[in-house]
Structure formats: structure tokens, C-alpha cells
Length: 317
Ligand SMILES: Cc1cc2nc3c(=O)[nH]c(=O)nc-3n(C[C@H](O)[C@H](O)[C@H](O)COP(=O)(O)OP(=O)(O)OC[C@H]3O[C@@H](n4cnc5c(N)ncnc54)[C@H](O)[C@@H]3O)c2cc1C
Image (cartoon, rainbow, N blue to C red; front, side, top):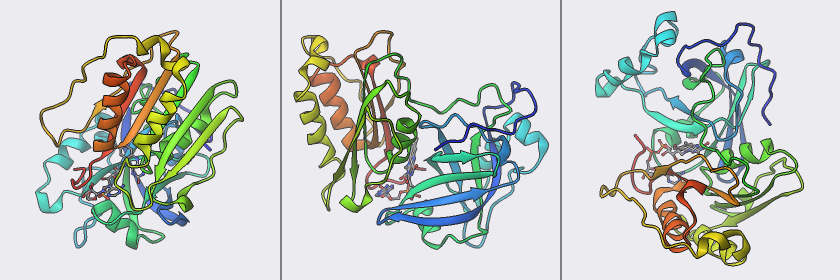
């Protein structure tokens, strides 16, 4: 659950929306076979933004033998003008610390604590870091600055006033879906379809009674193998929800010719939309779901947000 008590004493100003927070591991808790929660702490986390929902953050991991290269993480000026990014990009390859995108699972500014739920998987700098992470390990979190008027950046949940909310995702999107469901007003109806590696990866989510969560174990199947049929079944069982658009002419789907391009299309739902769908996870599976919802079913593009969170066989760098 997100805590709303930020200890922000100054008025937010026009500084960059995101800034680096030097942080260290405070606790590590194995939540399930494929989820590990890491709680970070840091001197400045009292001014970490508290919007929650699916707000994304970047984590900058130390390199073996190099540690964390200095990009002005602690200097007032690069923090104020956002120049740390240029410095990070210009580092020689062997010193440039890997950067990966994650989701704020919870923030407790008063305790200066941030939770991130990591998926445990085989390969990659983030996965390798997690495998040996221990209390006190240092990391840089690039996150929302509560002192900025733009600290709500990086949120892709824009349902407007849609009555029916559908959240579709795999395990990498589970932290975002949990954050969204836990923030929903009690009168909003929502259904979440979450594909996870195994049935034991279903995690508790504190939500109101009008929310339904279906955990879909893929049990060794390919990414999307449980999710794609579940989305089809959900739509087929609810013609009244998509009915107004089912009759619409099938829409074309803009797809990049670059097979490595990450699918990312995040609209703001129009006022009065009947249905809003939020879809995130492995890019190939998300592309299939996008084709189905927009091209085959004919749901308005403005009512569906699609986000490729990772791509099978390709590093996210
Ligand atoms: C907005 C956003 C929010 C995200 N939030 C979270 C989050 O809260 N928690 C979380 O765990 N992830 C989250 N992700 C996904 C995460 O960024 C990727 O999984 C990332 O690739 C992990 O980095 P890595 O260094 O471990 O692997 P990479 O170096 O990126 O990839 C190395 C190899 O591992 C594979 N791989 C990457 N991720 C997975 C996976 N999950 N399962 C199986 N194979 C994988 C790749 O296909 C590649 O073959 C989010 C992504 C985005 C864009």
C-alpha cells in the first residue's frame, strides 16, 4: 500500500520530474518462487513522489569490479538540472552501469523506504544483481521527485471515467497492477488477468470488493500462453462491454517494421468510455493481445493502453 504522508515541507517547483536517489538495500523478502521484494532505504527518500499506481522508475545497478560510476549522484547541480543522464550516457561502455525499468510497489517517505518487487528470472544484470543482493548493497534509484510539480510523470494508467476496467499483464506487470488495484476507489469495477510462472506466484492484493483478480499460471508454457486465451474468453463472455465497438470497422494496428521495437501506446481514455483496458508484459504477447483487441474486436485505440515491459531473448538496455 502506498503511504501518502510525504514529509515535503517545501512547495514543489519546476525542477526535473525525476532525480537520482542514492539508496541501499534494507531488507530482502522472498514472496513466492518468482517474486522477491527488495526494500531500499536512502537519506532522500522522504522526498520520493507518492503517486504510486504503475509509476515506473529506473534502477542503476553496480558493475562487478567498478561499482557505481559517478554521474553526480550526490551533487546539487546535476540533481537540479537533470544532467546526470548525459553523464551516464557518455560513460565508457565498461563503466556505464546497467539501467533497467521497474515499478514503485510501495513508498513510505516517513520511514524513507521504497519497495520494489523483482521477478526472479534467469539472465541479465538486474537478475544477476538480485541473485546476490544483500543488506547494505548500494544502488541508484531514478524516481519521481516530490519537490517537482511534474512528479506524476511515468504513470500510464489513464482510465478517465470508464466504468469497466480491465488490467492484463504478466508477472513483470503484477506490481503495477497491484498498485493500481490498491488505489482504486471502492465504487470502481475492475478485473485483472495476471499471467505468472506458477500457481504459487499468486500474491495477496488489498483491493475493494468490486475488483476481481484471476491469476493465470503458465506452468512452463511460453509467455502469453495463458494470458492470450484468457483475454479472448473475457471478451467473448462480455459482448455487452465491447458491443458498441464490435460493430465498428476493424482498425489497423500501427506496428513498427523493427522486430526489436518495444510496443508502447498509452492514450488517455475519452470521457464516457464504456471500457478501458491496460495491457503490459512480454512484447510478443502484448502485440498479439493488441492485434486481437484493436484489430479483430475493434475496440477504440483510445480505450486501450499497451506497454511492452520486456522482450523474450533480448536485453532491455
Ligand atoms: C514500465 C516498466 C515497469 C517494469 N516493472 C517491473 C517490475 O516491477 N518488476 C520486474 O521484475 N520487472 C519489471 N519490468 C521488467 C524489467 O524491466 C525487465 O524484465 C528487464 O528486462 C529485467 O532486466 P534484466 O537485466 O534482468 O534482464 P535483461 O538484460 O533486460 O534481459 C536479459 C535476458 O533476460 C530475459 N528477461 C528479461 N526479463 C525477463 C523476465 N521477467 N522473465 C524471463 N526472462 C526475462 C530477456 O528476454 C533477455 O533474454 C518493468 C518494465 C517496464 C518497461
